[in-house]
Length: 338
Image (cartoon, rainbow, N blue to C red):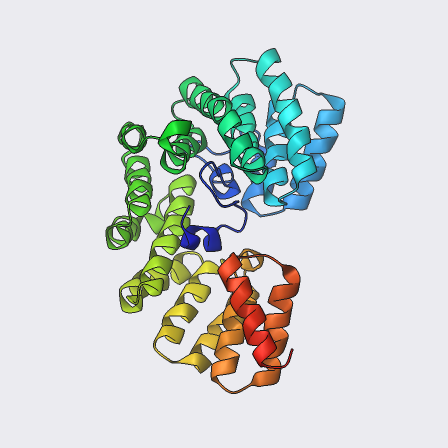
């Protein structure tokens, strides 16, 4: 996974087998859940309530696969290793008791993939076959269920060849998607992995307004990753139109204003960037972005050293983000006397 992708998906763990909760949480053309009450909580980002309801339902009925799926999303969302292990045990039992239920296999694949990678490459290598089999089974059982296809594409793109990765298989899965918009957004994911950021934005801009919730969600996530890559590569102006459209289509999300702040900062307009960072802070998903690190840089450039020091301190204290960014924040904090 590229650094850009990691910055975007703080819900995702870095390395080859990562299967993010953004993937896990992308509602399908049908949607993530068959259960309307769970789907409503997911759509409204009411994650704590979703987890509470999932636990209550599993306590009453341990074979509730929809509740298990909700529990899996929560374990990933909270980056909780112990919760992931508990879900893996439940999911393994679910696949044995209900082998024809895609949600059981999907929950096992995505959570085991993240947990194995968090334990190191050796564990990841040992678990890769199980992860791939689980995701492939979920996709085979419900070919029209977008989250399963999307997660399997992600596996093929991120896993090394020796662990079952295959860009050609990812391409095949993308092209075989039952809806043209799904095929287009999955192809854009393949293009993103291959570094074709400009092509990704061309493909995804219109899809931000897709009526398919899954497509719109992935278009936003992967388009933001492509836009961030362009900014990091010194091509910020090329990212700006997509980010402006992202703000219009998803005004509650932090990624749009954060991305535009990066564009303005790249142009030296740090005061404007700071306003956008503040806007991002108040939006959904801000905790998954290194807003304080970037805000600290803007404040430092504006000569507001005390505020910059405070922003860096918050970022370092949280301990989340890329290693390079954390190291740079510590260095800057030290230079400012923090």
